[in-house]
Image (cartoon, rainbow, N blue to C red; front, top):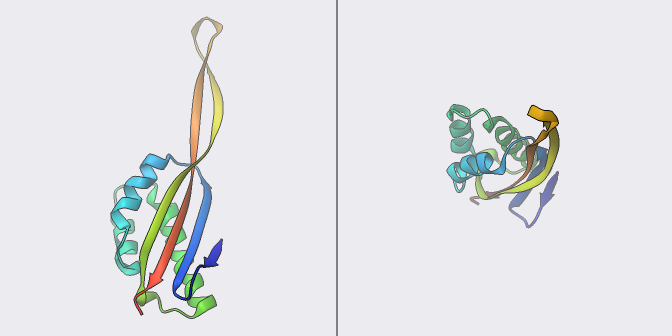
Length: 118
């Protein structure tokens, strides 16, 4: 989802990402405040597998800013990035003596705001 908050702020969000919010916040804290180009480079070489949805969201939001609003990608930087908890998938795993153990598979929501230098 793409939303333009003001003249130079573009917001994009990705919902129901099958990952823990703790893992995504670790990545979000590293790219917060950096330029678009530096953030893509950092996300590409971080050793975590969960960087892919963040990279896709950042790339998509910048591409939409270029296509829809005509803002140059070189002037964009990440002004806000928010990671929220989503719902949890609840599963049951069989255990000894006929009992069951709960398995919770977390989901997260990411919101990125890009701002132009100019």
